[in-house]
Image (cartoon, rainbow, N blue to C red; front, top):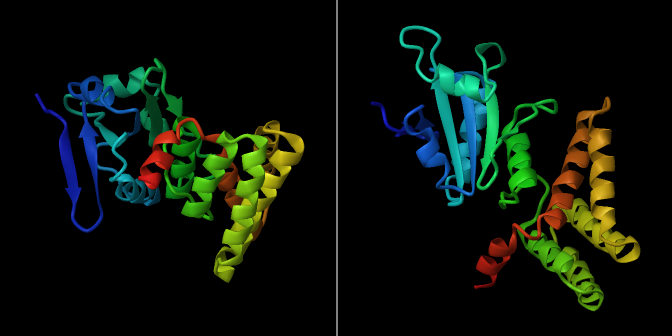
Length: 243
């Protein structure tokens, strides 16, 4: 019997390898588990992106980053496990997010690319677990969470605090700071429903034909909007920062 083993890749990353014997036992120990079903010895840009994600997320205790290596020869290790979750050789790699308390995993859609940034965005959107995203500023993420949990009076105060904070930002972060401020003002003016409406609108725009610069701009806006969407799951994140 081959139990879960830690895969150590010197100078690159650490993540967990799972098999049909260890899978269920390990998965249930985490609030969220991201699992890549792939060939037994994966390589290439997609695998590199997954390694980069594993390296960045290794300190996030409630999140597991794992892989199931599937063989279509010999004893066909893990083939039945992969098939159970709709992962076949023809569509490898397949990435699934398993959430505690949910019977079915969520499948990662790589329409916008199979990159570490897209994987991080996927985890954060579907699980609420905090992972920093491109264009986001940690202190402003904290303010966003506090803002969305507050009443109208305190939201006005937090908006002013945000305005003061972004005045001190370096020029390279100024555009991101402005997005946080704009979103806060729109929520005050239009209500909490603005968050989902705007998120859906921007996400739809990303599926069009865009320049790389525009894609990056819209991606940053989506990332920042997520800071306002995930307040329930981010409770522990804010509590830890305040200690």
